Length: 184
Image 1 (cartoon, rainbow, N blue to C red):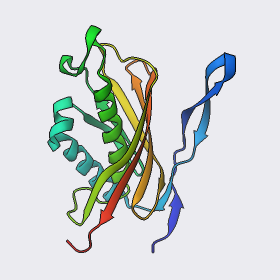
Image 2: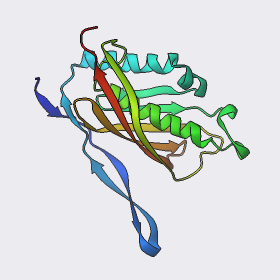
Image 3: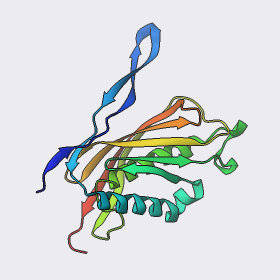
Image 4: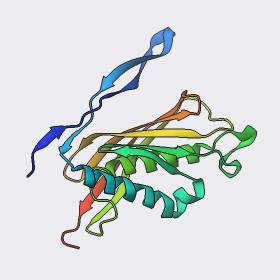
């Protein structure tokens, strides 16, 4: 077992509180990131390169047009460019494309805590929730995924999707499982 440490860089996330007649109220709070084994900068860079490569070669993310914007230990930002093929009426981004963006972003965040691309490891989504808050109309959107907790195999991620102006459009939770198959 290596030394465990908390990740640096706590960034604000919106917290949603439903309160009677007032409806939805948004407040900002600091959300601490997970604790996980410390990774060397070279390992982080290799991980970023692997995540970017996976997004470029995975047929479904390629079809949707997903692109890695940035990544670090326990978090990723993925861009979904506007494509007419991913819309419904009035150039609104299809909910399935948003759900796919949330799933992919949450799983890529999970992989930043492991060795993506190493045949020793296998992963898959075991659960997901999606909350649609506002439509994405005729524009790109960004998804920021953060690992909330990582166990031996199960990784919990929170994903926020914003439009080009930074408006929160969707939020989701992804539960991902990464299995160590032993020596590859």
